Structures are given as structure tokens and as C-alpha cells.
Length: 467
Image (cartoon, rainbow, N blue to C red; front, side, top):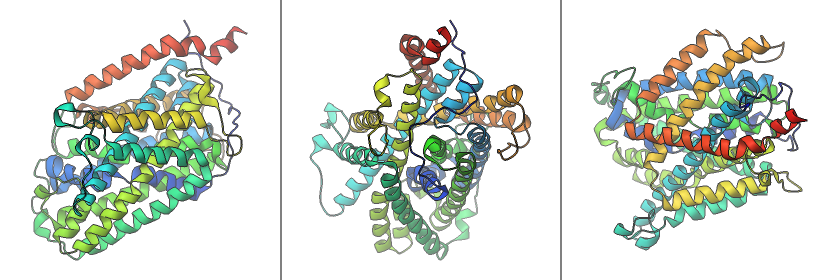
């Protein structure tokens, strides 16, 4: 049984259309990253994990993400083909490790889409309640007959609309996404500008009330906050999924990744400094933390306006993630590890139609019926796991294929940097709760069963090797 058969280093033929430039990639990356992380999780991180030192937690998480981004950049430059980590590991480690990475990516993006849609629904329902408007109890929450809720209908409707939009075509959806991202960035800049007028440095007097925490196994402190804030950076890898639709992908993909991470890190640092400098960190454990702070410092109308814009612009996370996940499923299907029906493209715009519809249906079910708290935690741990595989992959890439050629991106300080990345990712994984680890083990076993039950037998590479 050859579960480590590899695809060649040469780029595979793509039937998708190359239409995207650097600007579209940056908006795709920022649209994926800047969402519930900055509008909700920053407040929770400050209140329960790190206090004002959540800013340091963000920097630690950004360093971890940037190291992985360097590996993404070299792989995408040397192997400019869509599929992200799945495609890269298929080349250096073989089929089964690639499938596990792809499976973890599917869990990550499906979980992120579902939680973002639920977060969007929560913002909208809270906003409607300020006008005395409430949905029937049966339609206002995930399946829980004891509480009288059967389906959370608002996220389902949102994802139905997003699915239809993504099927329309890559340029249409990403142009719409870019407009929403601009609104989102404008709101954050307004928040920072107003917040700076109300900074009270006494709020920073006890900057790290929970301490540094433990490098391994901590539950609170800066390191535990970094594990939580790592979730706020998820989505940068969606840029690598667009390689088949990007002009000059070997150059534009690395540039798009670094611009996106750099811009969002700067925003996160400024936003958290304003949050903890204007309102005491113990009061920040609220779902709508940015509007809450604006109201607290005397800008209630601006706070309401920000709520409206957040409701509109959180849609970008769903759009960007659905775009990326449909491309992951399309690529895995092209290799035979998932049913071939997912390879079907729309005749005109060359969008993977059935893969997109499948993603839409799965995420509609998850956001409408399931309790998503544990799923959100699972997203973190599976992502860290495949980033560890990516770090090992860059070591194997250099060993098997040597240094990058002239004009290709070169990750500095190999092998030192990949080893540091592995250590940091493992540290962040140990900050996760036991129930998250149970979910991780179950997902790994389930992914393995799918591979050996379907993927191994239908692999196109297996058929080619037989011939």
C-alpha cells in the first residue's frame, strides 16, 4: 500500500482563468482575516486571558503566522498551483500526509465560515432588538428543543446569498468583497482615531495581570492569549488557494500574503491598545466590543453606525473563506481523493460550481443547527497542526529540490526558522483545552477513514502509477 506516492514538482495544468492581480489578493486576504477576531475575540482575550497585554499576545501570534507565511511564500513561488498546503505536501511528503492537511483545511475553513455567519447573525439580532424586533424563538438559535430553538435561520439565509454570489464568478465576487473590505478598514480607522482622544493610561497600569503564562500547557496569560488570537489571523492562507486564478502567481501570491498579514497586524495592535486604554480590560468581555467601547466613551451614534457596518462587512469573511474552501475541494477532487463531481466548472466564468454549492450546504447546516463553540476551538488546533506539517515540508523541499532558483522566493534561516515555527505551534496547541484535543483526535481518525475508504482507492495518481 503506497500512501506516500507523490505528485511531480512541475505545475499542474489548470482550467481556471487567470484574472487576479495583487490588489485583489490583498483584499481577499484582509477580507478573510479581519472579521470576528478583531470585532469580538480581542475583547474576550483582554478580559479573560491577558489583560492589556493582549497586544503582546497579538504580536506573538503574528510572529507565528509570519513564519508560516514565509513557508507559504516559498512554496507558492516554486509551485504556483492552487491547493495550498495540500498541494505542497503532496509534492514533498506524498498522498496521505497531503490528504490529512487538506482535510484539516476543510475543517478550518468550514468552521470559520460557520462561526463567522453565526457571529454576523448575532450582531444583526442584537441590532434588531434595539428597535424592538425579535425573531420567533424557534428560528433564533441552533437545534435545542429544551430551549425551544430549532434552527438559527439568519446565518442560513446569509450563506445562501453568499453561495449564490460566489458561484457568479471570481471577479464579481472579489470586487464586491473589496468594496466591503474598504468599508471595514474605514470603520476601524474611525474607531482608532476617536479612541485615541479618550485614552486613560491608568487602564494600562496593570499591563499583564495574568502574567506571561506557560510556554506549554498554560490556560491564561500572554501565551494563552496568543493561542486565542491566532484564530484572529486565520484566513491569510486563502490567498494561496487563488494561485490558479492569479497573474504571475510566483510573485503576486507571496506579496499578497505579506501585505495582508502586515496590515492586519498593525490594525490589531492599534485596536487593542485603544480598547484597553479607553475601557478597563475587565469590562471588555462582550460580543460587540468595538461598538461597546465607542458608546462607553461618549460616541453612541458612531457606535450604532459601526454596528451597522460590522453587520455588513463580516460578510467578507464568509465570501473569502467560501471562495478558498471551494478551491481546496476542487483541487482534491481533481486528484481523485474526493468525488469527481466537484470538478465541474461553470461554462463561462470557470467557477467550481458543485464544490461551491457543497460548501454552502454544509456550512448552512453547521451554522443553522450546530452549537459552534467547540468547533471554533477545533479550527485553531487543526490549523496549527497543518502549519507544523508545512514547516516540516519546507525542510523536505530544500532537501529534495535544493535552493530556490533566481526569481523565486527564498525563506531565510532554513532550517532554524522552520524548527522555531514547529516549537511555537506546538506551544500554542498545548494551550488548547482537553475537549479540543478530543475533537482533534476524532477529526484525524475520521479523515483517515475517509482516505482509506474512498481516497486511496480512487486516487488518480494510483491509476497513473499502475499504467
